[in-house]
Length: 477
Image (cartoon, rainbow, N blue to C red; front, side, top):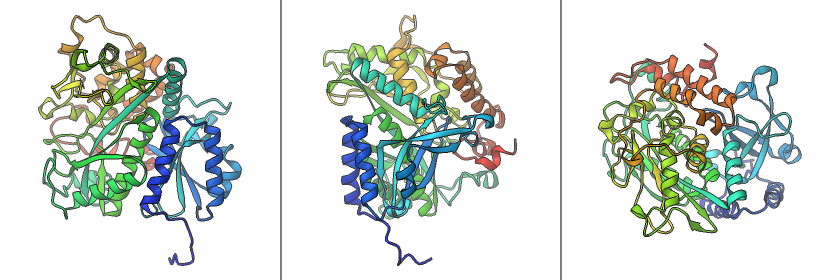
């Protein structure tokens, strides 16, 4: 269809970066949300080329959902946006299905027209229950509430940066077609840091990096990873809710760019047996009044006592929250000790098999790195589990917690049992209701897949993976 008569907004990447960095700065400085709302509504009203606003929210398992609202409608009705919650797995039952979406105007992103279509603006939403309160199953809302409480009570800013690995496979819908093909086809076999300028993986990485830069990610480095066709594109840290939002956008951008190139970006933790899997190493710190509370030049490994206490609490609850970090059948293939698997429940400055690592840092960058996180996990739940456990959790009565020989589970059934039997996960998720719903979803996924992993990736563990299967498949059960 011809587009010559259309006049939708399509900004240059330089203009987009300027807009997104300004929005990011406002968010980091905690500018009054009312002022930001007024500014965003004026921008939408004044820019005639904007046709729609895409509102994003997350379900209980971590899938990103998107609704496009006509701009003129949204400006008039943004305080009364409803949707059917019973259609979202893990949300409400049919008899109580109506939920609302509130617009988090601070989380606005101006998107490239060649990737997301012209005339669109992206914004994250808050899921609101019928009585106007935050919806209990909205994991983004749980994280946002906790982060705001920590700032209001203690002056803490929770910081996170994620290193998200993925694979690039030949063909569109390579994951959905896996039950037919039984294999994934690499587009590159160069290996760690190595690629040629014209190969498909390099072209993909370069394109994604350009889109991220335009959307204000503040890129740091990008490169092919250890396994064939594997990639990692790093960007700077941010306040915890913004960091989780960026994880969702990172994966969305990767998938969209890959599709445009006729390929598939996959965030299955271990799509191919016999090579390194994909992780989401999660670097975290806490600051107050601009000071990094994890830094102490005289501390053990230069990590402050506050940081060690934070770390010890995470290790104490490692088994409790393993299902949040590794939420799929496929994730437990990655916890194979033969491939630098971070499955040992202890902390180390050097051992990459440790669940938690203490990287070399300075006053600005000192942090702890939680390595036992899979890239298909719900980022809001992951960061809530890390920070709430680290700040409010218990410390185990273990003689030397940091040199423990304990290991994380090697299968999802054990992780589900640990999660269900834990008093801490009930507190973490605000009660039994959301906890039980999450565990039931994971149990259903596990029961549809082979109980024993074996050495071959089974079609069922891909077909029924929460990032792959769709509503058509849900309705078959």
